[in-house]
Length: 311
Image (cartoon, rainbow, N blue to C red; front, side, top):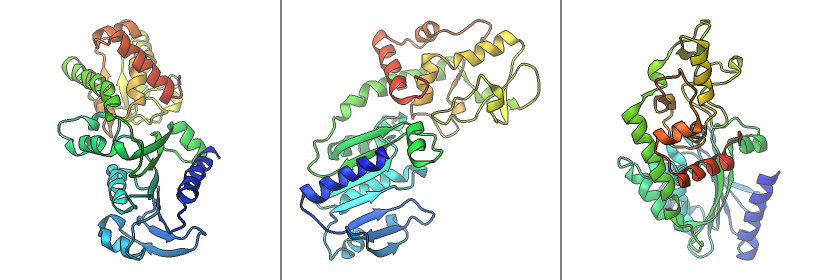
């Protein structure tokens, strides 16, 4: 598979071009957060629980008090644990030739937490750690699920990080920050949320099931409502209103909200309900209400084409 092939290419460059044949620290996402240490031939030496609670010295002692040549990691993603794992692993790799290679979300680069005033830790994470990124290979949720036979609702990236990296400029993400911040502000000022209009699922003629959260490759609503197993939804007074509501999710703005990683875990509480569905909502009307410039429109549409399987 392409993902594994790419990962092997990264490993090959670490082992051969740096002429190192030391131990590999392999962190696996399992129920007990197992840390496994093996040599380059695959011989296993240690299995350790609770990696995050270990002191760096304890980890280095497993390698004769030396820093690690390679750390391979597929860490837990819940509660942004992957960020903590990334930071800890960078502390234990060798500054001259060590490499951290891990699979995980890139939400510490692009989402509302990257700039939110109440999330200074993540803001500092992006500013501080971009310089250690040597390469990123990004996959949409659909691509990742296809390669790994999983059902993730978010895209992930393969990161290669080290102390000799070319790095990436965190300023490149600022246009995304400003746009998302503007959209959030207008949602809060002018609209109520989808969730605030929820009622329990019913067989009423003009009832639309609505998911409490989207799943990256899924939307909050479906044109084929039989595919949506949501227990909640919104009841309308007419077929016209119902259809205009469903069609609004096919606009560029809603697709953008769906493919960006800035919403909360139950994000129907953050998504706007447009108040009046007696008329059809078009891209032009939404762009005008949200004061989206021509350049921002291009940015939105390009982001959808890059990240979203609806293209």
